[in-house]
Length: 326
Image 1 (cartoon, rainbow, N blue to C red):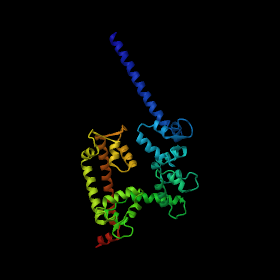
Image 2: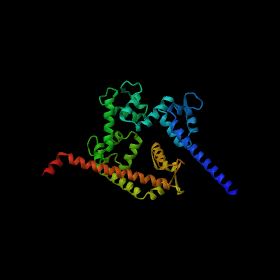
Image 3: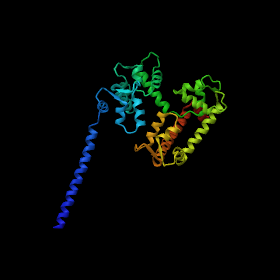
Image 4: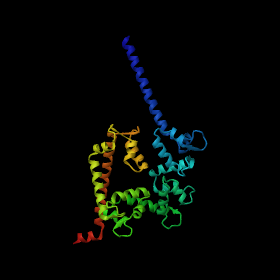
């Protein structure tokens, strides 16, 4: 009799366990099918249904105050301290753009579907207004204040080629910055390549060792060599790098510690989010080492690809063909 009872209990538990597993599976499947649209997502954030999301409403839905505020500022394009529905949808569209083809990206930006992009359409999806303006000007090759589909696709193709192109050497970078080719870089020449003037000034100050308000090629190369050596050292000894960032030696890196080490707050927040994989607002040594490993693997792959491209370019050059014939 006892054996029968035990058997019945076991069968009952098995049925309950199977039902629970199926229920969880069904819930996950349901969640996948019922994906919330950007419009519905906006509605859930607009708590008082007044057509805008305030900072308080936004922060009530997100745990990390610093991250929430930074994200809010990205979406609040016109900086009026509230997110309009149009701003929210534009931000969501920009997030999806990374997965779209170039043609789909153009169509998503071309709000009125007239086959061309205005400055407003381009800037609206960019986090930084000045960057958006610079991007528009780069795309508008004929300077008619409109970006045609052909101009957009040409720009995208060029960007892809630049991304995959071998990284310029420090000497090449110096020559690119030295607009008047006088062998020295001024603050103005730095600013043309940096959208942030304070950042450009800080960078120049670090390189200009003799404080004569100009950077010679020797100073530039010296700084580049030291920077690369420090980068290599950190990649080879990530544990030591972690210890450097963990200023109070409590075994984790907080957002405040990250901010202290990085001049740009937006950049620091972005970096922090990548390393903080479980989103608990602190980076453990394991998380940091895993991030370093992935970064190293990515850089190794890029280096191999660039090496292959350099070899291909040399093979295709007329000079190399002549040498091969000789």
